[in-house]
Image (spheres, rainbow, N blue to C red):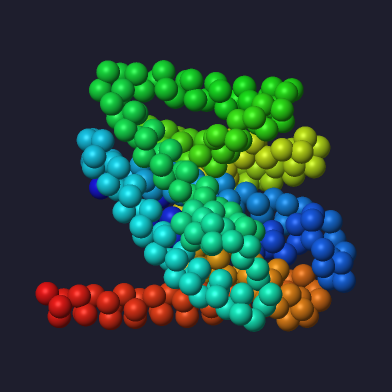
Length: 350
């Protein structure tokens, strides 16, 4: 596996940052129904609206990571095998959370399952009919399938030097969709088949394959310039996303904003090298998937009152983060123990 712009630690750290943004977004976005929370500052709402970029970050990490893992695999079979293993790795975590949160929710917290079909669809690919905030499970599966197929096509065409055509066509389409005055109408149709997050993950593949981040990073050797440029890019990303969401009403601009934001924050992490913050981000990233699955269950379905009792935004955010992290640690350790027991039993049977 070749060396890339950001390492596994960087990826884990970014995953942790995205998980924290997701928690903040779900707490204080513009559709927040907890009116008695002391949210007196518009910037808190803006940060929450911006926080939805976390979904695009998850998609970007998935696409970039899959591209790296298949960098030395050129055959279609080997690429699809990597995608399938990634699918199984994710679904094992999801199924474990599903088998815990769904039965408990039905038994004690009034969660209703209307049919066996809903239960089966939720278990395998479409859980938003039970816990709405788990909708990204389906999107993640779409990303794995779409990126795997894109990698197969890209690697095949690369042999014939058609990769520039792919890049130019993809970028032209993306920019055209964003600046087109009929974007909302077009996207309403396109979204039935292709999601924004699949496009973001494909952008990540193009960036990784052509080492675009490495090339940009090598252009600036002065650390001060790198820091200032990265801060500028973060601010631009923030302002552009807030503007488009509030004034245009759509989020397809994330296709451009997410790669820019990811580059900027990773450069800041590398250049500043703040060990405590890096370690904290990596720790949250280690439990990122369970953080995502756990926190909306407590916030919206099980114990809303207990979550928001501190009343002040920062205190509520910290409190929900602590609850979710504790649950994530417990879930992760339980899964590890069960897998170890299962492995030992399987070996004995052999």
